Image 1 (spheres, rainbow, N blue to C red):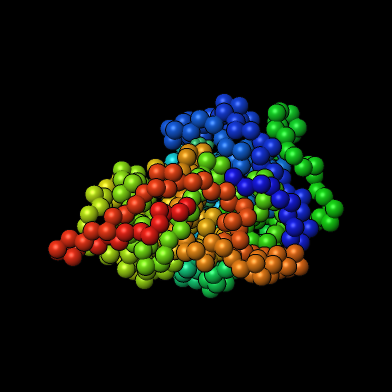
Image 2: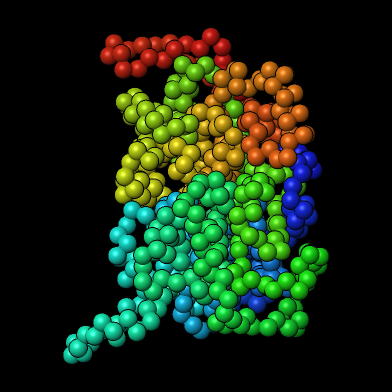
Length: 511
Ligand SMILES: Nc1ncnc2c1ncn2[C@@H]1O[C@H](COP(=O)(O)OP(=O)(O)OP(=O)(O)O)[C@@H](O)[C@H]1O
């Protein structure tokens, strides 16, 4: 898809020698060393028969010789299986200690994403006797408290003594908690018995987005509350070389320069994103210990292997018509149409439904709707009852919907990251997918001085978190001619009802 280019932007020292997960081949479950048979069975029930590269690499750095010694940052493409890459080793290692208390916390930016990740944990954790909880906004906190904290049992005849109640140490009834930052802080500040003192693993999924958005400083609170001085409640099982059998790790085992004799914090941090930030000021908030970076290939952002990217050049005022023609051609396939804002999502959805000629169900998915409506629409989209979702960027990062064949950028994303996450809603888990981007002429050919400016900025800047899409698009994303559209013409016909006005294009649609 894109030629490889060495990282030319100065980055933190530990980011300069990443482990390339592409060194690890996909590994059948039967060959995954030390995988708990009960987990293997649970994975097979999910239809999973082998682990992807990033999952194998994570396994080596956690269950293998890496032995969770270091904090791990994963920057691997969308749809490459990052969720299971962290969920599997955490569930396996927690299952080796028979004790019920909150030991793993997974934080995600949105409620829908948290619900999606909880489903993955629910599919594997119970198989090894672990309990998973959820803490997300827009649901009753009281309901969550009853599920997260073991309330002392008061039998019918005992006389209730408030002193007794206070003496009874409220216990966590979950081992793993999946949460959004806002609701997590609610529990930290108000829920009796909610404690992070035994926390061992902190996963920050969609790290760059979470670090960009300030949420009542949840991160320092979690790090501070979980680093209790006391000895850890439980010791990790010592790993003797014989247990490692075929487990290998790309990097040298053992502590590298600068970390000798440093005590290992109990809290292991796992950072996951397809567009991991390189901003030192943001990464410093994580207080990473001896961090290891896992990437895929040597490009900063990588699109899924089987993604086909197309651009359609058209005038702004004709965009709705081009979109209609495109959707007519993609009938029967699940598509997500992205716009640049919640308002334009709302307008475009209204317009397409007013048009009424498209034989497919089109719905809006944005923060204009209440969470309940959004969850219902997402469920209908997963089930195929809705074929086209008109969405804004905020709603879809990380969203994993099986069978999405097409992503259409109705408005050009302003940053490469947005393009990567939008396009990443398709071509997931090694499947094929297509990404169409409607561009105006001026959005395609950047004035030469602007290209020069970007180049200079890239060469001398400390880090270029977001370069503008046209430059990236033209210089790296290869696109193919969408032949079916090359000689497509839209006839100029307006019917009496005025419902439909199709303009004749002065020239065939150029791609
Ligand atoms: N080993 C596997 N074998 C088959 N399918 C898998 C495997 N691991 C994950 N998947 C599937 O791949 C899809 C993408 O997984 P996941 O959502 O974890 O990707 P991701 O890297 O987190 O993507 P994003 O960056 O968009 O969040 C999911 O539908 C998941 O069920």
